[in-house]
Length: 608
Image (cartoon, rainbow, N blue to C red; front, top):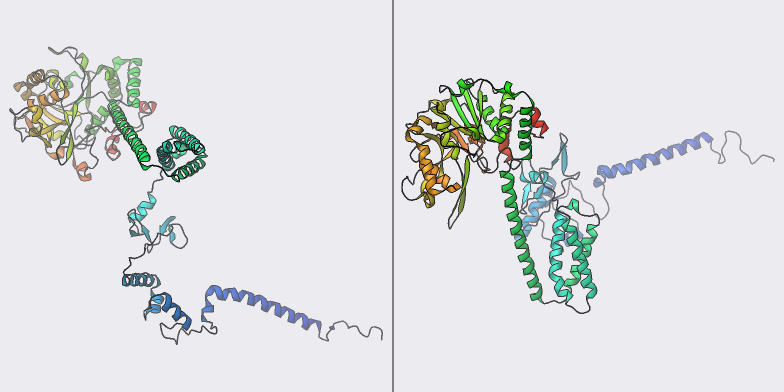
């Protein structure tokens, strides 16, 4: 019948309703989707450990600790030590500690050393955490210090400090190239004598010349050309070829010795050059300070200088006031001395400072101290070259002198620095005829306490109140002091902070004593030191150690408490605080008394 094989609407080809067929397909698809999601979750969550598989069944609840399958027991018996009974119990409770102890115990039983544990990388997801934005290592991890010993990663440990403060070597490639050049030079003469090796000889020669040219223009890795790694590999390959040939050891040894001698001579030359440049740096006034002096001098003559001359002659000669003497040709240094003294003074109105300088810096000093006020203190600037004194014409300005004294014995050697008066100090009684007592400050001194107590100091008839340097006694200097006329156990004394009784000085005529000693000995620096020490023999009043701490220009390890307690800090030595070479941790005590806002400092690029 036509159309008899068809299906009616709402029917199915298999006799099922259409709705029921589609409902079954939807349920099946949903089931497959759910199963496809559950299987990965089971493995991710570790639930598969609870499932049992034939042949490897293991019931964690009913089995005894230490139970293992048969084939595993055979493997352990053949290839490893016997496990203890509580092995898995320890492993379950303290896995990291157990593994470490287990390996250690078994290796000790066999007489072996514990294995060397290499440090894990510090920047992995497993061993670092972030605390406050800062990467913190796992405290249970270990790293190796520079001696190869393990150390804990914990706050304050050396390992953390070492990693955080590790300096990048800026010339590692340069050093490698120098080593290659050294070896190539040693092998080149022997290779050049070998027959049929002209190609290798030419190759070595070209590589040597190329490295010599590169190293002559480079001191750090940043100076090297871009293709330097290829050149280094090429030289390494050439050296390897040269080493493959049988050579006479005597020839190579001879060349190595020649290169060693050349290197030793070169190192000696650089040491001498370094010493010379160091001396030049510490004894030459920095460009910025010279600029400051010149700028102030030009400004002094540009403005009306008559307004700068103040009528303070009465204060300059008033013996009832506290008078301080400073010898200096450094504007900033003398300013720091005065500023630090006035800042700690209980009464600044009774302080008078006399700055003695040379003709070159006189006008700069005049303008500086007229532009800057130091509370109520009075400041006088004197040009030593224009002083009119009896029997003293054409005087030259000389700063207080510093002496380095070295002692050498069979077992050790030591060096001490002593600062001493210059020729000009012995003119003080004549320059300041109306004064009976003064305090002499050097321009490398910083005052940290009120000095008014020095004026009421009873020195018991002594002339010079000074800090003692008992590291050097007069008996140790008898080679040029002589044998007689002094107590060999007496300590030497230091200039820097000195309380001078001018009245007693004039009474004993110590200036004439000094001049006679200088005439006898000569005019060298050593003669001046000898004359100064003998002139004040028995006339030194030792100040308490709290009044002065010296050595900040050459001693790197001063006690912090001593720095705070000292009334004055003396930067005697080469490394003055206004120099770039000055000891950094001591500079702060000096810099805080500078006027950072002064216009002339910015003009001369002086950055305190």
